[in-house]
Amino acid sequence: NIRLFLRYRDISRSFSEIDSTKEFLLRKRESDLLVIDAHGAAAANTVYFPLLDQVYPGYDYIDLQVEIPPFWAPTFGFILNEYDKVFWYSDGDDNLLQSQQLLMETAANQIQTYLNDGGKLLMSARFPVSFNDPAQKGSTLVFAFTPMDSLSSSSGQARIARDGKVFPTGGFAEYDTLVASGFIAGVDAFYPKDPANAMFEGDLLAVSGWVGPPTLIAKSLFTNGQTNQVFVGVELHRLNEDEVALQSFFNRVRNIEFDW
Image (cartoon, rainbow, N blue to C red; front, side, top):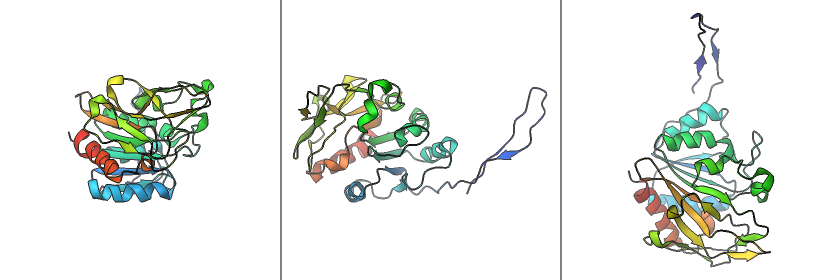
């Protein structure tokens, strides 16, 4: 357990009384990969755990639905900075904290700092229906740290049919096509900040007049030109009809894109 003791010195060089934080637990790192579960459904873990055991055996795990940090700053930042790579997956019901809709919004400043310091992040997310409300458009911190520029503000909805394809774009032909294992409603296709970094597009079904971009997966680059983030706007565990293709995706991201 760790406790921080603080005091300040003013212009006269006088010191304040010492104050302290509550104790918090900083676990000893066992791997260079941290898996962060902000999803809350066992169905995701039944796909991810066996897959990760194959492509990256030995990883640390935190369930953010249960182990919410007592202090996002600095506690969560300390946790992230222990790891070279992070896999974060979440759904559209992350919990409402600090007037935010999603845990990834609450943690946005720590995630941005982690990326700025050379961390590597694979993130899979689903957003709530109200996330792109015109009244909130552009206000979320998620658009700041991800390769997303924005979501479509169109009415209606994008969906992926059972056996629908999520296929790599021309610049990423080394990846396999991913296939939906069931019908997926409310797909969060997005406009990427840099179209050259759009990695995958979806074979989307437009419902009730929906109009929007096809991009579902994009990456961002660190200052050295290497990939430091791959963001997925759909729950990856639902693209497991072709298990070999999904395993290959994780392997390429973890062991090739992030191998620097």
